[in-house]
Length: 293
Image 1 (tube, rainbow, N blue to C red):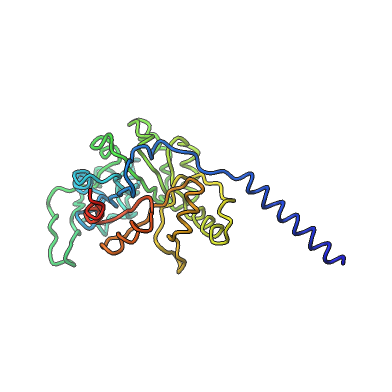
Image 2 (cartoon, rainbow, N blue to C red):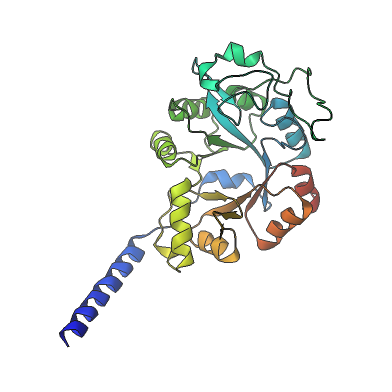
């Protein structure tokens, strides 16, 4: 009898704890960033459309903007002399004719590089953008070239913090309601939110993991998001992430689901059909066609 009584008390305490956590949880507040969009799913040009032209370049972003995509997606690093540049990798080796870490190079050195040097769409038979004057852009150049275009900026895990300079550029260009910032590194994301609380952010890795686990055990309602979006692959470490239950659970917390990076017609159509809020693709042309835009 005593064991049953103890078990009953523990069960009541556990239920009380769950109820308290549920009552104390909150959904994400509405953010004016999403007022920029009237049609869903939102079309993200991943790196400007990396399978159409050299990614993370003004050339790629201009082509994507001409196509009418909703958001220009890009990656941010910082140079040795403190300038924010748009490039995916921590080094310039894979995408340019140079070698070296971005953080160890000055902007002048970065600007000498050919950002279209290694781009190919036929497995290296030809390199059509070599010598075409395509350079690595700065974030400031992006904002000046596209002053009204919504952008999605991924903060990389750089040695030097870039939260403060990114926030300053966003504010200087009055892009607080046109910019969505993400980092998969929780420390970087928390730092940016503290410095720039008015800007919309997506979830970092541990935040996504926490919600996925809670949602799988039907406790997603206990999650209080600091973010307004989950930007996720279809699956991770063998676990299916993007599924109807995940999407509905996210929506119950007022969080959008953006999936990356389907690039074939079949993959893209699958995510259109499942009802995600945004699709990041290296082939935004296919996505736009399938949406009839």
